[in-house]
Length: 344
Image 1 (cartoon, rainbow, N blue to C red):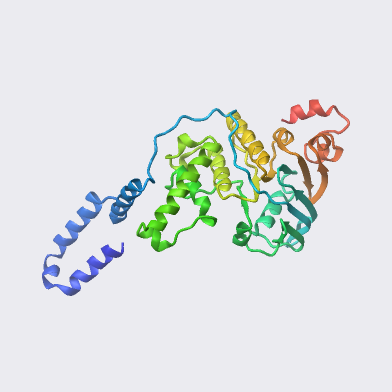
Image 2: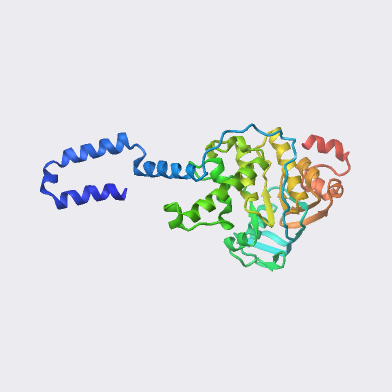
C-alpha cells in the first residue's frame, strides 16, 4: 500500500511526461497490480519468505495419518503449581457474581468447577487470569499472589486457558495457530522476523518442532496445514487445548472445553486430560457434562449463586443432595443413578 501510494503521488509531482501519459501509467499499474500481482507485493514477499523458510527446514511436511483416539499420548513431565483461590468476591454493580468463594487445585490432579449457568464459574476463571480484579480475597499460584496482576503478568506466571468460544485469527494454519502459543516462552524480535535473521530462524524452527509435537499429542497432526478457522467446533476446541499446552503452563484452565465435541473427540480429550494430569499438570476444568466430570475429576467444587455449596471427591458430589437439586434438578429422594442417566 505504501509503495502504491508513493507511485501515485510521486510521479505526477516529479515529471511532466508522467502527467501526459498518466492514464497509461495508471492503467498499466492497475493491470499489473490487479492481475499479475493479485495478492499484492505482500504475496511476493510471503512467497520469498516461505522459500527461505523451507531451505531453513521450516516447511510444510507430508500429512500423517490421524492417531487412534484411545491411544495414550506420551507427555513430558510438567512442573505444575498449586492454585489457591481464597475468599474471592466480585460484584458487577448490584449483581454479586462471587461471594467468598474458595478453591484449591493441586499439581497432578484434575479439579472440576461445576454449577448452573450464572453461578460464577467463568467469572472465577477470569479472576484467576487477571481479566477481572477481585473485590476481596486472594489468588495464589505457587508462592505468588496474583489477584492484582494484569492478564499478561498472570500469563507470565504460567497460567494458560481455553475459552468457551474459540478465538483463532483468520488465514493461519493449524500449525501456526499452535506455534503462536509459545510467544511467552520463545520469542524473536520484529526486525529479526522481518529480515529472517538467524535468531528468528532458530526460534521459528524450535516453535514448529514443538508445535508438531503438541499436535501429535492432541491427535491433530494430520490437520497441521489446514486453515484453523475452517475446522469444526470440536476440533477448534482441541486446537485451543494444544495452543494452551504448548505454552508449558504451570496451571491449565479449561472452560467448557467438551461443548460441541463428538464421541471420538470426547474420548481423545479425556485421554489427553488424564495424560496431562499424570505428567504433573494442575488442571482446573469447568464443564457441564457431569458424566465427563465424574470420570476425570479428582476433586469437584460446586458453585451456586456465586458461593461454593459443596467440595469433595466425585463419589461424594455425585450423591450430594444440594448438588442434585440445584445443579442437576434431580430429586435427592429418588434413585440417583437412574435420574442421572435421564439427565445425561
